[in-house]
Structure formats: structure tokens, C-alpha cells
Length: 459
Ligand SMILES: Cc1cc2nc3c(=O)[nH]c(=O)nc-3n(C[C@H](O)[C@H](O)[C@H](O)COP(=O)(O)OP(=O)(O)OC[C@H]3O[C@@H](n4cnc5c(N)ncnc54)[C@H](O)[C@@H]3O)c2cc1C
Image (cartoon, rainbow, N blue to C red; front, side, top):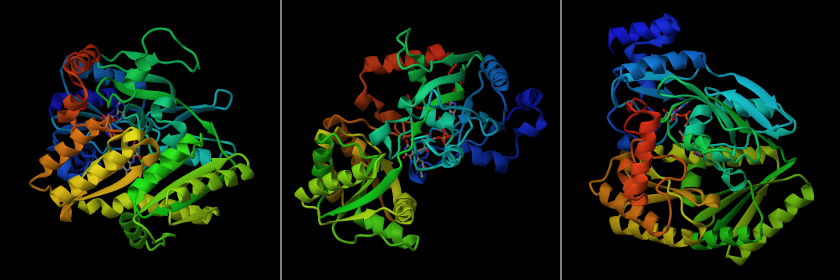
């Protein structure tokens, strides 16, 4: 990286907060995307660690004037290559901007700097009697800024929606260095175009988020988990759609291939409660009153039995529930060495059965294992193409093309939560018309006329 740039960064931040050591820089250039899917990583970067918005503003002003690439860096947990550096540039690590500014129990919000991690929020609200932050994607190293711009989802979206549904206000630094505050902490607000919601899901290409005010929710007193096993996937899908028709809203409904969940349990020396059947549904339910919780179990189990469930298991003690959660959380790590690509399409409920049947047919046609795990409660299943050693098969493109064509045929989205990043750009034209793509590109130009913010991402 150019010496003049390094000197300027040192002038803005002080030497201690400018990282040039190659080994250290490398760890900021990569993310958690599958190896077989990653673009080529460029390590000719300087990592800077600002502690306040004004410093980011000065960095952006300088970068913009000199047309230098900038990538905002959160926890580096992106699964779509969004945080990967592919050209020389400045990586702004948000890790020092990690203050929780205020928990406002009247407005039911928490205001944070963008570098606050999900783990910090979990730990903060574990100590709180009545409130918590409801969004929980799988890696607690993710930061608020990353969660905002990736519009993260996770298992609890069934009841609480996604990040977009939690964000009240945010502070952001534009490519020009100007600082703006978007949104208001109101239920009704019809003034002007909704710039705040344009930033949510923008994957770091429109500006650097520095603060966000997020909604928090009351904790239910009674929480339970329920595992129900099925011999075939279509019965499981049918049961989920029937459950929704009753108006019930569990906190989470996860779908798991039996093989995968049993392997995950074995790998961490734990026992999964059911070995029968080919697939399991994992419900997490919570209610304010104990009786309501039992009523919910009864309704769910009743519907599952009507749809040929083989057995069901309720976990009520926190120890048993923790075991289930630990095993569920380990499913992905336990298959990780074999995952070529984890496709996270979102599919409308009415077409979920058709989608899953067709995935099985694609798997048979190409003789490749496609494992299905994920957030069935919101139609966001994760189909992982697996091979030994996660080696991309020669016909990978054909398999992926067929899956994405199926997603479109089912009226779905090519990504439900992981984002486009740098790995799905070529698929954008499947989902969007030329006019829509042009509008997106023009919006990017307005926010970032010199295309310095994370080029090659999202569009
Ligand atoms: C094991 C595992 C499980 C996961 N499970 C889920 C899940 O269930 N649901 C889900 O939605 N995601 C999931 N993810 C993906 C990931 O955690 C989310 O996308 C998360 O929102 C990324 O946040 P981050 O702070 O790590 O961002 P990073 O990976 O650091 O960056 C991602 C993008 O955000 C931009 N960015 C980061 N911070 C800022 C900022 N302050 N301002 C502007 N741009 C910024 C970056 O430039 C980049 O484009 C999972 C990841 C892993 C590894």
C-alpha cells in the first residue's frame, strides 16, 4: 500500500491504529465464505481502526478525493464474500467503535456504535430481567454495522422478522465524508423517501454505518423446544404450512436433514433425542404464560401427527434446550469441510414442497449430495452442495444454474439472508429486470460517484 496513504491514515488516527503488517492485514481481507466460492483475495491493503465517526469522515473525504477503495469491516462473518478485499484499498475495521450507548426501556430500543458485536448484545440482555434483542444469526462475532447492511435474519425471523424490522435510526458516513442521520424512532413517519431502509441490505456499498438504534423486545417467561421427526420432507413442509394457518407464531421453526443433525451431535459428543425418520422439525416456542406454552405444544404436535409425524420430543429444562441448540448450531461447522456452496434461497411457502422435491431430483440427476438445512419457518432453506474435500465439481455451474432457475420458477429470491456479496452478482439478472438493475446502479452512483465503497459487491 502506498506510503502517502499510510502516512495520511497515521495523521488522522495515530500510528497505533494503522495496521500494515502483512500477516495481520491478511486476517482482515478474508471472510467466512466457502473456500470454493471465494474470489481472489488481495492483501495489498492498509487496515485502519477509527474510534469515532469524525475520524471515519476524514478517512472517507481523503479516500474519495484520491479515489481509493474502502471496505468497512465488521466481524468478517459474511458468507457471500462481501467482506473480502479484491483490490488494494483501505479496510476500516469498526472494532473500536464498540460502545453500547443507551438502553431506552421506554422506547424499547438499544443504541449502539456499529462495532458492537452480537455477543455483546446477547451478554448485555442475558443480565436483563425483561428485555432482549431478538435477532440471532448464527455467528455472535457479527457486528451491528454488518448486521444492518446485510439485513441479517437468523432463526427467530419467524416471529420477529429480520434486521430491517428492528432498525429505528442510524448514523452513517457517506463516501464524501458527510455524516447523515437516517430514520426516526417513531411508529408512524411518512416524510420523504425512506433512505434508512435503502441502507439496510446495501452490503456496505452506499456508506459506512457508525451507529444504529435497534428495537428490543420483552422476554417471554416460558420457553420450550420441540423436535418432531418425519419419514419424508413433504409431510414436514405440509405440517409447517398447516401450523401457520392456525395463527400460531413459534419463535423458530428449523428444518434438518436427519443425517446432518446426527453427525453434528456425534461430532460434539452429544445425543440428539430422535434417531427415527429422515427429517426433523425443530420448534422453539415461547409464551408469557405456561398454559399457553402447553397449548402451543399440543396444537403443533397435533398437526404434525395429522401429517404422519413419527414421534415428538419436548425439551423444557434449560439444560436439554441448550443441548438441542448446541447440536443445531454445530450442523454447519460439522459439514463445513464438504460444503462447496451453501445456497440460501428464500421460497414462498406455497411453493416450498415443489422446491424441495425438485432439489431432490437435481441431486439425483447430477449424483451430488445437496443437504437441506435451515429456516423453514420463513422459507429460507440452506441447500449445501457437498463433495469430499469441498472440491467444486466440474458440473458445478450446471447444478447451480438449475437450482437458481428453480428458485425463480418458484417465485423466490436468490438469497434470503447471506446477500449477493461477491459470489452471486452474476445471478442478479435472473431476479431483476434491466430497469431495476439500472436504478440500483444509478442509486449507487448518487451515494458513491467514484465507486470507492467495496466495489464488486452486491450489484
Ligand atoms: C456460522 C455462521 C452462521 C451465520 N448465520 C447467519 C444467519 O442465520 N442469518 C444471517 O442473516 N446471516 C448469517 N451469517 C452471515 C453473517 O453473520 C451476517 O451476514 C452478518 O450480518 C455479517 O456481519 P459482520 O459484522 O460479520 O460483517 P462483515 O462480514 O464484516 O461484512 C459484511 C458486509 O458488511 C459491510 N459492513 C460491515 N460493517 C459495516 C459498517 N459498519 N458499515 C457499512 N458496511 C459494513 C462490509 O463491508 C461487507 O460488505 C452467518 C455466518 C456464519 C459464519
